[in-house]
Image (cartoon, rainbow, N blue to C red; front, side, top):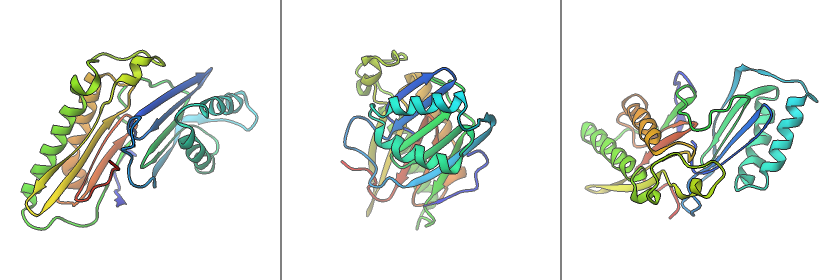
Amino acid sequence: MSSSSASKLLGSVLVFAMISVQIVFIHCVMSLNETNSLNQTNAYLHHICINSQGTYKPGSPYEENLNRVIRDSYLSKCRSCLTTAFSELRGRCPKNKGRIIWYDNCLLEISPINSLGKIDYEYNFYMYNEKDVNGDTNLFNKNTRALLYRLKEKATSKENNNGKQDLPEIGGKRLGMKMLYATGEKSLRTMKLYGMVQCTKDLSIKDCIVCLNWIIAKLPTCCSNKQGGRVLSTCCNFRYELYRFVKT
């Protein structure tokens, strides 16, 4: 896949952990649930150095707090994400207080601003397969849109989230009960279309629906007539391909 030249530059995803110490907030999200349904690869996708959130100096209280939060977070399910992502962010955005990096299976956001439970409309990007669809492109686009909306309904359904429909308690068991994730496929004569949608677990189901509707609406812009594509933000994302891209 190749990245587009979208205006504002996701993923994120599902095992959620957030730890805050004074002015440092870490949002670490491992792709998918506590399941084995991970993407087949964990390639680097994109990063953003948020200049508007300021910078810090080596040895400053901000850096000390950041390092403490990262050390504490190594005990969480985000350990593998943090090891790779934080090291990469040190090189790409060495002095930025605000920074985000996306991988196939991981999202790490570091910021002095607590955005927990809020939809992020600012930082998002899209990617697409360079190959165009053969045949009836209008029908293919229609089928892709229908599959993604069907998966959105599944991801946010009461049955898929153990009956929970409200914002879960942060750090409690209720947080882990929610899925906000779904995969599926659709037969297209001689081939199959595979899709995936997901939200970070800090979102309420209502906000997950809003977030997924928002990014799916970007489908014509990002991926029209393309064999595969995805839109990623810091709190929800979707992907579709003509091949199976998640482990089962």
